[in-house]
Amino acid sequence: MAIIAWIIVALIITTIALVYAKLYLRIPMAWIADVFPKYTHGKLTTALNGWSLSMGYVSTPPLETIAALTYLNFIVGGLINFSGLQTKKGVIAALLLLIGFFLINSIGISKVSKFNFGITFIKIIIPMTAYIPFLITYFS
Image (cartoon, rainbow, N blue to C red):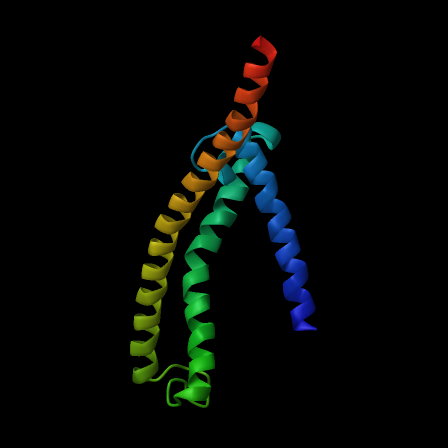
């Protein structure tokens, strides 16, 4: 059942991402998730959306760390005690995981921006290579 939920969530997130990508092509600007609701729904919705996004950005890395630590506890052991709290070893592991997730995400952002540049380049080259033969054929 959990796998079905993950698939449904992936479809929903993909749909939202595609909408933001299409909107960004029309109005390219930073912080689109904060700005577009202002244009469509006003300042109150923008404030609520901004607050919600901030809470999500702040809470996601620690939650991912706790989930990873819980899984690692089955392999390594001694990271979480019987009451569900982290041991000293668990706190150190959590800090290392959080730093690792930060580094992976930082490197990932850099790689994604380079990949996005390549895709944009391809999206310009393909129409241009189709346009030039049409232009030459029209004038011949």
